[in-house]
Image (cartoon, one colour):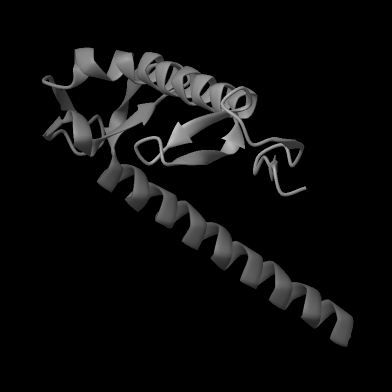
Length: 126
């Protein structure tokens, strides 16, 4: 097995030749993954990068625009507004107002849960 090399990706053994492995480090050594796995991995990376670029392309058209938050009425730039990546649009609320509203709803629901828990305990005591 001295002339065999194991691919670090598929874990198969192949002869340590240029037929199965690409050269690395200026042609001194062979890569740790076989040619098939290396090409497959590179093609996956390219596809993922292309997909990410296509998904982010819609953001470029909004990048330089100013938006008005419907809750606070302030003019905000693109980075301060909430984004809906699935619908490829900018929402009408900024992050600050959205988080403030989310915390208010959470606290309101928390108070209601505490109150209902207290009522339940009082009923059980009777």
